[in-house]
Image (tube, rainbow, N blue to C red; front, side, top):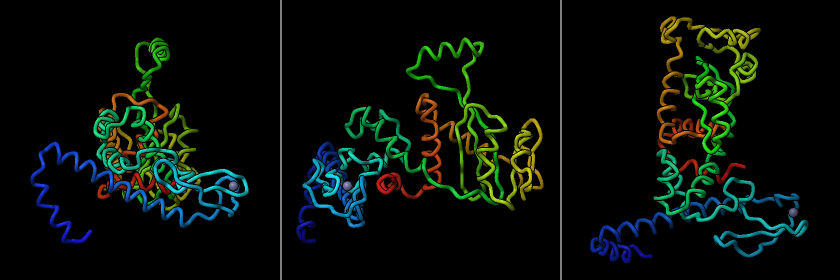
Length: 309
Ligand SMILES: [Zn+2]
C-alpha cells in the first residue's frame, strides 16, 4: 500500500468506537503475529537440509497445512511435515495468537487470563504454556563461575487433582503438607541453575552442583555440610555462612542474600498460579528465570520455541 493511501485511511480511525478500535487492534495483532511467525518459518524452510524422519534430501513441496504453512513430502519415506517439525510448536494452531500469548506469558498472566484475552480454551492455554516453556527449560548453561551462591529451598507440594494422594500425605506427615525441595545456585552475573528433587540429600546436592561450578570460583553456602563434599578436591574457595539468620555477610561480599531474594520473588510470583503440580515446577522456575534474564524483550519465548528442537 502506498504511503499516501495509508495516510488517507488513518483519519478514519478517529471515527471508530472503543469496541471497534479493540476489534481492529485484535486484527492487527493477529496479522503482525502471523507475519513474524511466517518469517521464522520461511527461514527454517530455507535451511531445511533433509527429511526429519530419515534424513533423505529428496523432498518435494506438498501443498499447505490448514494454517497456510508449506508442507513437504519426503520421496524416500513418504512422510509429510512442515518446517516447524521438531519444535514444541509443531501442529499448534492459531499462529495469529502466538505473539500475543507470548506477551501475556512474559507478563506472568495466569491461564484464565490468557484464555479470556485470546478467546481460547483453558486446555489450549495450558498446552501452549508448556510448549513455550520447553526452550527456556532446556537452556544449556555454562558452569557457574565467579562468586556463586547455593542453597536449598522448599515449596509446599500441590496435589491438585490428586485428592487421594493428598489425604494420604497429610496422614503420613502428621497433618503437615509435605514440602518439595528445590536446589538452586546462582552467580552475581545472573546465571541461575535449579533442580527439583525428592530429597535434599548430600548425594543429590553433589550431583546437582559438582559438575556445574567452575574451578577458581567462590562458593557461598549456609552451614549445610553437604556443600563441603561438593568442593572436596576442587580448586573452589568455600565460604560457609554459618549462623541462624542466614543473612550474615563475610568479608563484605560473601553472602547468600542474592539467592534468598531471588527465591523470595519467585515464591511471591508463584502465588498467582494457586498451586502448581510438582512435575511442572521446573517449567515455572525456568519461566521466572527467563523473565529475569530477558527483561527488555517480550517476544523471546515464541522465537525460542520456534527454533528450539
Ligand atoms: Zn524421509
